Picture (cartoon, rainbow, N blue to C red):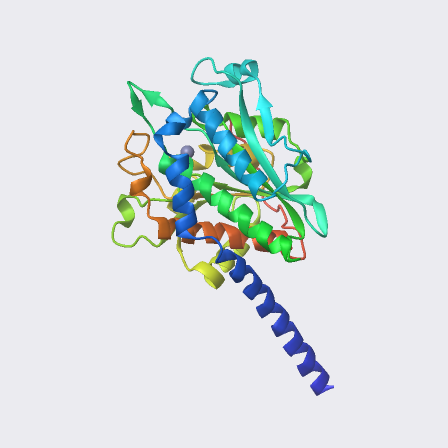
Length: 338
Ligand SMILES: [Zn+2]
């Protein structure tokens, strides 16, 4: 009997370490070099600051679509239609910044092997503020960094899936438009979801993870986490333990405080999910001297740090997708209008 117990204990240990090794193996495919390569294109002058509905933003959307086609990561629509088109009328009605031309969210999808109806959404906004007075606002950190992070995360999941290690739950890679005009793309998606929101188990939203702020000049190994404990105790615990297990980044909760005057919890796309009672984590490096300036350029990104933070999101998504139980929503929704 004792031997048998010992045998099972060893089996469980092997099982655990194997799953850890697998996720580590694919996290390694997320590299600072590839992130850099993507970001130097995505935040280049050619994309003209990616202003919602304008030609530069259309180029950005096409870049994302071409990436998913190239890597054979499907559209949730099941063909080559990776866009969720939003009409000019809807955008203009909901915009805080005047009339807008039509625009699009870009969606890619990896179907779960065991619980395909349960969805994890990983999001970042594809747009930025465009060009003002002849100056291009490249938005390398905001939110080129989150955008290229998603590309690398999607590629890592795809590589695993190709080798029979696909996620048990489904993952939606959601690039939303119109964030800078009032969180429009995420508002539109959550009002017109491709998958039912009741089966959307969480949203990991990335907006600016390639730089450091003034509070971390001496130790750049940090990221702000916002929202992780607001709706689900499970999510907060998982996020924390995954970081300890794999990445050891200092998780800074300063902006998670309900009384923080910056109100970042309400200021990026994850809030549109949280409003619908979907647990979220917002990954963020804080603001810096180039925030919303033409000087937010790709040469100022810390690519090793970007890679490390991207791996944290990947490992967290991996755990949420593969763990036995769906995370539980056990806290009350915060009712606040934007
Ligand atoms: Zn942003």
